[in-house]
Length: 428
Image 1 (cartoon, one colour):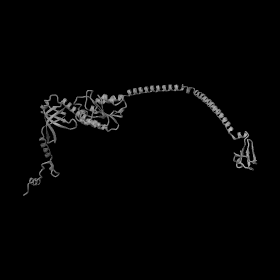
Image 2 (spheres, rainbow, N blue to C red):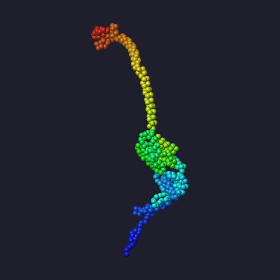
Image 3 (cartoon, rainbow, N blue to C red):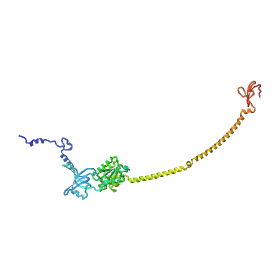
Image 4 (cartoon, rainbow, N blue to C red):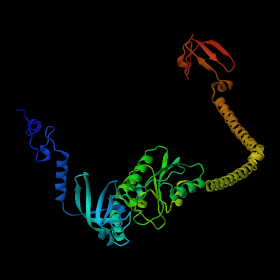
């Protein structure tokens, strides 16, 4: 007897299957979880979570006529991340007209995981708008924190270049702020170049977009100054420019940053962190480049001062040269020579007279000495009739006893000599 077909297949398909793991850690490649079990596990886990308060920005509010449920999209104010939110229309009606897209709210919701779509959503039972006072308090707290860290210190601020090669501009798409900055700057200096980065400057994603544009411009070697510009708006509209992430990105820039957010009365924290604060985008255009007309006028003024100073200096030098040329030593140089010649002549005459006097006195002294020498000289004695008798050996005889008979003697007279022989010796 043949087995029915359904029984043959039953034998094959009814084979025992392995038991599914109880926990995710027990799964393996051979024994995995099916998708339905994973979503069921996630749903079970999420359902155990308590009710939570969540803050964010409403970027979408959908209410269909006659529907009891409204659909919202709540996005993080700092990063590009959002969650769907469902709420009964009574929850929104309780807020009146205060709920609109772009508003910052606090939602009391229960997390819920949709297993069929594999997505997380929030089921809200309360929605509260964040008041301006609370936003200001948060901004003030962040201001104190950053001030304590030194991000507002004047010593860390960089000086703007006199004439930047390229101006980096971060602004909204086709915004009036871009027009004000570019037109004003080019009116003052027509040759200025701009590197414009158009990004989202309001709402969700503004912080990330502006910070990214800042980093890109800061990495450009040709960009010498960066302007962050935006038109005016409410406190909530300008909140991205008081965001801590953006402020720290500006503080980390190596290129000088100019803050041109809103109007004169607007004061986001970016004004305190930036190197230069411009009251408006138009004011930023005036600050980043010099004015050609003003610089030309300044150059003309400086050139005029230089010309006057140089002319005055030349006139003074000419006057001093004329005074030098008018001095007697320059006008009549021979006069000094004549005066020196007279002095030399007088000195020469005095020297001649002094030398003559010395020579006369010396002559008198020589004559006197000559007379004395002559009077004391033996020759003078001989002239008076005396004679000098010398022995043969040249010794002068001083007594008769110095000679003996027959000695030959030499007798020196005043004029000539006589050789004599001793014939007798007679003592005195």
